[in-house]
Amino acid sequence: MYLDFYHFNEMPFSLTPNTEFFCALAPHNEALKVILSALSMAEGFIKVTGEVGTGKTLLCRKLINHLNDKFVACYLPNPYLSPDELRMAFAKELGVDTEQEGVRQNLHNAIEAQLLMLKKENRQAVLIIDEAQSLSWDALEMLRLFSNLETEKSKLLQMVLFGQPELDHNLSNPKVRQIRQRISFSYTLRTMSSQEVAYYIGHRLTMAGGSESIIPQSVRNVIALATKGTPRLVNIVCHKMLLRAYGQGKERASWFHMLSAVADTEDCKTRLLPNTRIIYLSIFLITVFLSFNVYKGAL
View 1 (spheres, one colour):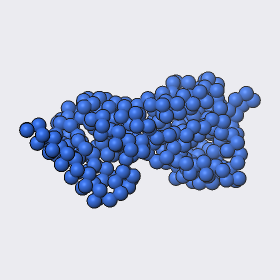
View 2 (spheres, rainbow, N blue to C red; view 1 turned 60 degrees about the horizontal axis):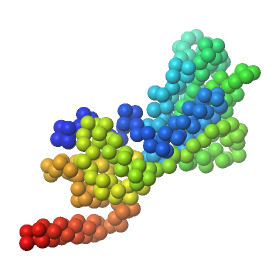
View 3 (cartoon, rainbow, N blue to C red; view 1 turned 30 degrees about the vertical axis):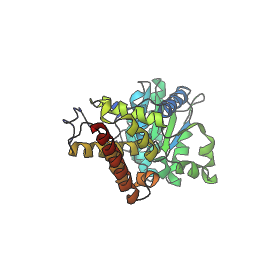
View 4 (cartoon, rainbow, N blue to C red; view 1 turned 60 degrees about the vertical axis):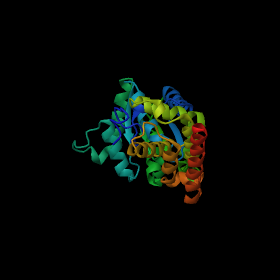
């Protein structure tokens, strides 16, 4: 790959959520502050929604790493669970010994006992669920039952739900109105602005050990337009650009590499380039323009 060629320590635009590359732009910074404020006030349900690729999972992992020893984070990345599976997964994350005799038959009581023990230690359990839009109605009902666990003064458990906009649609159903009414804080992640995309690209290039000049500013602005500021799409396009530039032995990515990368990315090409004819026409016009300038310089 192009790691050594561009002097990177690691891949700058990997799709794997890496908290070391967390870029504290307004959308994610604000969301993190909202969640931490809600947790500090011991509120019950907290909801964060955002379109596909806006960085919810990265924010989720950043939150887990950010929590101090006062909190016990229970992370469930897979919501495709039956109520019993959800309860078992939560119990294991909470530290309940599910292999102990009689525990599985009285798992709800074991979870409550563990939560009470944590409360006596002045610690707060936080259940964090990613892709929460995929929770079944029965699983949502199980979460409601968990939310009933409390002392006279405070909740024994707080929950943070990360999900796509479909989560809002699911929660609007009357059958889960009790959960909806218990959501005290919510935040909707937006996509990045053009300026934020430019900063984001530069941030990831330098964090990986490379130079910001590898992807010029003028190219970044068009990337923002083609991706509509969606972080995942920005990563995909930039990775493909660097692959193409590396393949040609170029130290910097160009418009040609950008157009080719956009044309090769389904969710981008329809936004910027309706069909391949326009791609080839754009490349042709840029080539003619550059050749004309070279010719004028020679005269």
